[in-house]
Length: 111
Image (tube, rainbow, N blue to C red; front, side):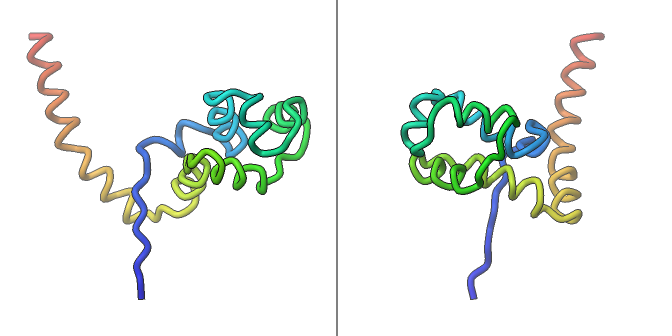
């Protein structure tokens, strides 16, 4: 039996409010025309899907991830829906030493 191990990009689920917003950021980063051609979609149709005027087909997101090797949309979904409370608590506890160190530095600068 194999265990699934995921590492999430910090803040990915907080950075985007929806999969549409996440996918739009990915598309515009690479260029609307370039992505539209790669996933066999008209740029105007893709733009309408990203703006919410048309239904966004999840198959297009899958095709995008395959064509560009960009897992960001899948990682967004995982970060948004697969983290349990124990994992979130563990991540928060692991972040405390860094935050305390940063706070101490700031306090020294103010003093």
